[in-house]
Length: 166
Image (cartoon, one colour):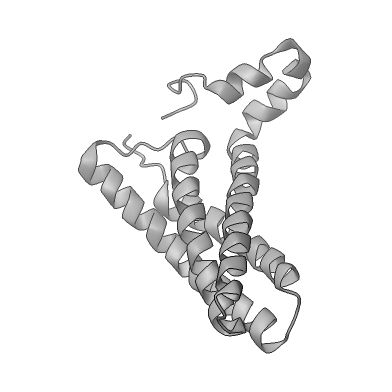
């Protein structure tokens, strides 16, 4: 949808409030990037919380260091990617996908791109935490910065790419 066709959402209404009107022109001009960053932070929070919970549970179950980082990363990925797909589809990229077939194809593309970045993240976690013994959270933060950038590029250029005829 073009800017003219998109219905105002909660974020448009918030920046239109008197207290935020000074920010509204900047927000409207940079909406996609700002929304991506906003939901990227929330997605990272989902990832970190679920990684922390699963790491704690797996360590208490007596698993070794390598399985803990791999399994906790996979669990956090499932939760974070599901959250990211919904928010990116609705608020970030204003998806044009329609019908079951279109939405399914978009989901496959989105999850496929995120699967690629899961392997990137798992590789960084393995290298940083398992092999180099760098602090788990320092490694996790670095991995998430790399993944955040890759995910934006994949989403913008592949998954939610606007079709010229739409």
